[in-house]
Image (cartoon, rainbow, N blue to C red; front, side):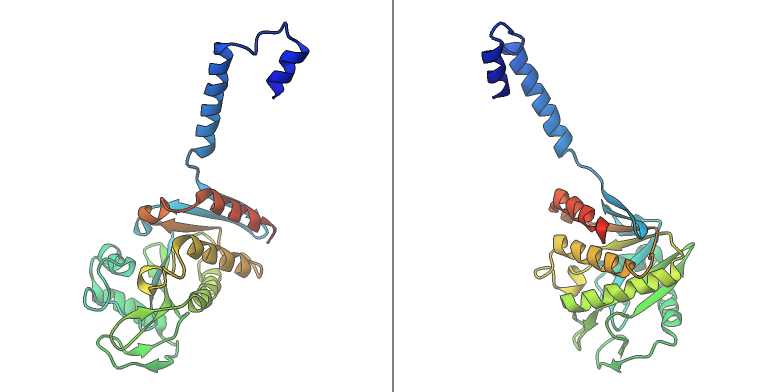
Length: 255
């Protein structure tokens, strides 16, 4: 419309006419479209509190930061009979502990010392229940691993959870992180799928927003860590509405 108006006002100006200019407009449009749609890092810096949130595609166990690994309220570790060897916890046992089940169990026992159990359950494996939201914080090299119990185990060793229990667990997690991480960067997976069996209720996009909201709400009481990294499996990352998540991150700046 602008070009048509220009042609009416200045009919002698022919620069904006013809095939060369049309090709130029098409080229500019294509370049602008590519720039707009090119994959960008989903990240946001905040000043109150001074922290940063980043959502990345990757492998949790390749992160060199503090880690959050989901588990059940019985803190079972044995694979593959009780805990799937393909789960994040199962892979952590294999990769981070070299498959040394006794070493992991010893560290968890030490971390849980002083935390009262809330009951017992008759089943194979561990039977003491510590309750949803219990965190066993263990030292791993120069970092910490926060084993977060956000699922309950039943008598058949099936883990299950609910959005309410995930939310409660996340709020307790941030309290633990703020006390023990000494700042730094904390990496967390998408909580809610797999182990919790609530991916149909809390799909990855919503689970990420759940994590973000709980983190920002908890941050109102004080800084939790320098950076929170939400690490998403590649197959889930490709399904995310990344522009919407970036917009959501930006909307939290006033929190």
